[in-house]
Each structure stands twice: as structure tokens, then as C-alpha cells.
Length: 127
Ligand SMILES: [Zn+2]
Image 1 (cartoon, rainbow, N blue to C red):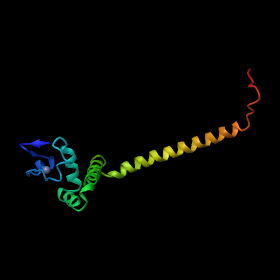
Image 2 (image 1 turned 45 degrees about the vertical axis):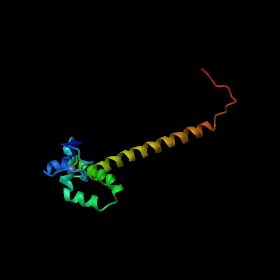
Image 3 (image 1 turned 60 degrees about the vertical axis):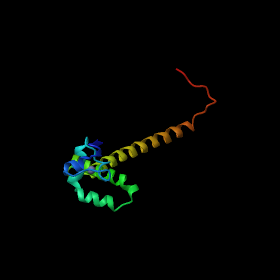
Image 4 (image 1 turned 90 degrees about the vertical axis):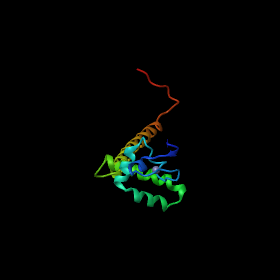
């Protein structure tokens, strides 16, 4: 996003700082996503986010920011459990799918065992 010839991000706007082309937060906190920044600021703090970004390979920074933003958004939606609520929900879905898979595997085995006793050379009996 461009403002008066330079990039601008919500992080800098919120902190009343000048946002330049070197701003590490600009790609992740656009002006039209203020809540994203507020969630990340509330959970991590801007200085910690900047420390995290400066301590890792620049190629990994987008992944780190995706993680920070995801965790922050989860914490905003689930104030007590944060990401744990999402993990529990996914584990529940996984367990349900495993139960369904076990049931269907049993059904297939049952039908296969019945098919072994079918004599395909006999004509089908009709009423
Ligand atoms: Zn900025």
C-alpha cells in the first residue's frame, strides 16, 4: 500500500512512526487489516515480533509471521485456549475419521468374506 510516495503499514500508523520501504512489518500488516496487527501486538508485542524477525533467515520470515499472525488470531478468538482449541477440534475430527475408517474397513472385510462364498456359476435366484 502506498501513502504519499512511501509504503505504509498499520503497525507504523498505530505507533505513529514513519513507514519506509525497509519496514519489516509492512508486508504483513496492511492498512486494511488493523485487527491482525492488534492481535499480534497484544499477544507478542511489537518489539518481540521485530526480535523474532531479526533473529531468523529472511527467507523464513514470511513463515514466522504467518505463525505469529495465526497464533494471535487464535488467541483473540479463543482467549483461554488459543491454538489449543483449534488443535483439539482437529484431533476430534481426526478421531471421528479414524472411527469411520475402522467401521468401513470392517464392512469391506465382512462383504469380501461373504463374496468368497458366492458361486458365480449358479444362476441368480429370483422370486
Ligand atoms: Zn511499517
